[in-house]
Image (cartoon, rainbow, N blue to C red; front, side, top):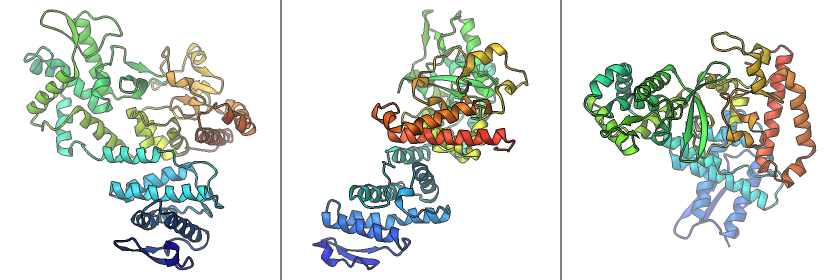
Length: 469
């Protein structure tokens, strides 16, 4: 038996892995609870032989990253039970910044997950009562690794941006004469370059795809055929100009329906068609060649590039998933934005409304105009206001407590009592919520509770005249 080779009191073990000897070290783990517990779990797993010695050896030295993280971030915990989901999210971000290898990051997360899972399984003291890992952490790592690849090189991106400065009408004269669909590609590149939307999403854009929220911010309505979702993303004036140019072209074609597709053209026989993805990619290759750019650049390259730029500007993977519409995005990831002032400020640069306002009566548009009383009544919610574009169906609003995690949700101190009552009801009847599956899973329930706690704290700070950022 493997246990015969172990001295549980020693911090150094030599284990025979049949073909190789593996040296386990535990001296990097804080003495006391953590070191003793990890040694006990490792010993049990070695005896069970459900994992190879080589795998457990990798887990052993990979755990060092977690304790380095605790030390560098000055996080003081006494047992594994004090680990909460937000800490795992921070740990993932730490790994993304400090561990260059994707395989290293994955094995570190797997090592920590193994300890937590088996500590719970063995019914040891000091372990979380609910699952901390739900698979999102691995998707976060995968998302980040993808964003780090296939980005457009800086010098090529500079050429692209310079070309996009040329007015659409001038490019139409240059490109439109060569091909009946030539005028479409320049605005298409502009829109995808500055939004990162998929080509399939771009081709579904309609004449009325630009909406204005109650603060006067321009939002682009994006429908994804990939996961059948709808989202609104803030856009700059370059995107708005591209859309306006295409709307003008549609008017010239006699297309007056707001739902007409932006990338429509008149075929050789006079019929109206929408350019397809294959033609779009072919036109992109021609556009790239004319600008002396490599054909390896694709529409998806713009998506990866924008995601990387957002990361470099301080946005977290949570905001990126929401903005780019990744299917794996979990609504509770927006909790990071609610709690982190820095991320909130960065996100505001994209055009989103802050979570907490002084008063709904004080909300004004970007131009300084007051919101009409009629508009206030339309957007009013029991605990705040919805900043989504008016007269638009929002499917996600059917989800329980979705507003608390929505970047367009506005709340003020006048709704403090409502939020406090909401929190009291959740705390008083958690068992029923879970039994009736009202929230979906325990993690969502816990995140909703913490989101309410944060919102209440911020509202109280506003009420007391403190500056919360």
